[in-house]
Image (cartoon, rainbow, N blue to C red):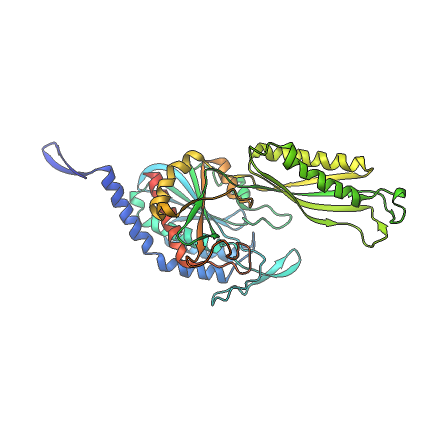
Length: 429
């Protein structure tokens, strides 16, 4: 709507707020369309040359070169290889943050692409293939495109945007720190943003679809090791020793009652899984020790702490009842990823407008974990999933993230650019 105003004898033409918003959105649409081909080029380069966690040196250089070409001030070497840049709009307003993760996985690619990864590296002492089997190459390319798009309309933005290119989301190498936690420790949010947004591509949704939910979205992740010590003896005379294998089996079964009988299952689901049992060398020797390795997944921070205490207590007392000893060590991993309810409700209309209401999917709880959770503990966060399985394929049977056959429909990436850019514009308006 255009209004005519008489002021000091002059006839002024003023554009109303809705018209102004429409004008900015039109400019943004033009800006995001202008990078549609670049994003494919960037993604293919990144896909062809992946790097493992805390080793994203060339990836960081590639990102830095682009951000500097946009006239942005860039900070490098954050949490080892992270890259951060800030865009200041033409008007005063709040700071918001956008995050993309950069690291690849120790996976040998099996997808037949002209830009398939042939890279190799060393992981835990082994020579491995390296692949962007989780789509972090697309996240980087999308955020590079968002940065370029927003720079083109920066005079219209009422606030600031922090672009965060994060290393080591898949976990830092043993003995090292990394990822979101280290970036925050080094002062990433010294100027705290009002909100933080992030996305993740997924093969479980088709191109054009966006999935998320209010509140808890992804589980916390804590790994544990239980060392059960008995007393070695001949297998034919178990009474002469203490059998840590039997004690371990009792511990495994007893801990399953934590989730099913000891915590409130109506509040949130939880999972305790054992992934490895190591002990003994032959059939007729009862060994001294057994090692159990597993993971805990929860969707509530209070329940998470409670389950860890119960796991340790259960293991120790069950072992004691068998005459053995259990030493429990828990590696505290990523917290629960929680979408701030108020922020999610506020921004859902934006995502519905960009993707189409029929393409907005309320996802189930996801027992996988994400270190975006650390940002969302500091400030309200919204994390959503972008479908990348071609529309003519069944997303339920598509190769999952972390598979050597993980495939990305590149036509899906434009929606990632448009949605993330529009979230910025709508929030700042």
